[in-house]
Length: 137
Picture 1 (cartoon, rainbow, N blue to C red):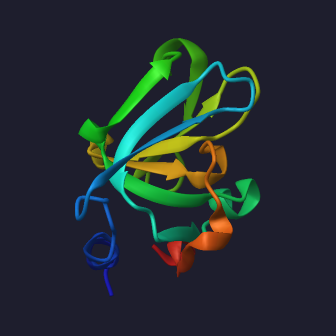
Picture 2: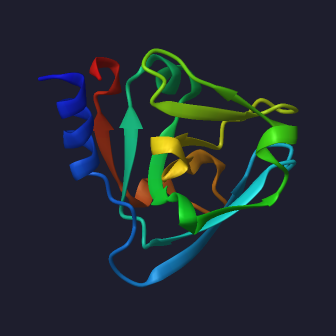
């Protein structure tokens, strides 16, 4: 399967939280210099990726359209560092102060992958985990 076909297949199974009543979620990096909020239907499934960076940082993600995600404290330009690797499909953002990686931007910011470990009051034990083969994208 070509890289483009793999990416399209991945998008087809991606839940962007557009079905059902929106729930308001919030989160932050460890030092709280970066804080965000987004709307998503009730989160029932998250995605764990096995690519090299997600494996090292322990990321588990939920996805939302870029227009439903808002920084409430901090700035991408002033308070965060972006990192891209391999095919540069995703911009992984890290807080320049504490190093936490609360989210990443894909498709030029049209899709935001939010690390649920950075979300406030989110219980990962209550959701299904989908394992995603990002290492072979």
